[in-house]
Length: 157
Image (cartoon, rainbow, N blue to C red):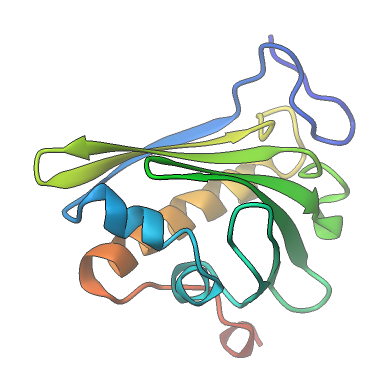
């Protein structure tokens, strides 16, 4: 059985939420969609800050719900983010890591996504895993068609 600390940090042996997505676009196009606030805003939701390695950005979901992310790695086939704050998840995301591993798949890309530390024992797991499923589908749509389906504060009201 895997466990997490009360701050959501990954405990030894804890894998976290995982999902694989396939794109028609090459790895460079997928990686580019993970490196600018404009691109991330187009598939996830309103973002401020910077998404370059060592940068920090904030995804705002209105009504005090937000995620602050530190970009811990940007490589040609791998992007890694660490959650610095997500108060509406009662600290469960803080210290967790989101990893986007990219590999060529024919003419396209295979994305292996893992949110290390987001495990079924957390109170937010069901909502957060459903959220990631929706957000990752939006990423695929954005990269392959130019049209994502991000969260919009004005649409949530």
